[in-house]
Image (cartoon, rainbow, N blue to C red; front, side, top):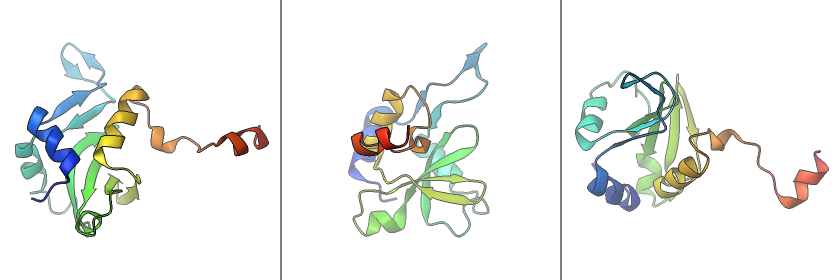
Length: 128
């Protein structure tokens, strides 16, 4: 697999992670981000039916069932906005790389920041 540089650095240091999961008796009962190890990525890629028609690499689970994906087409073109979310057949661009995604995910305490309405100082006051 060819992986982006920022993700390679992460995987070299951590080889996966569990962030903001809600635990009860040591079991995840919802929410959070589960970033796969390299071995888990290899296992996920075996589920070809799940990723049919998508040229991507699953790197984690997000928000109960969504996959966080590296889009190989964007990566091959050198586009730094290579992260997507795959949820029940919908392949949605996040317009982020891994470094920005992880930073914003942590800063937002695990909230789905990519769904927030985009406000600037100009349009915020006009829409209130």
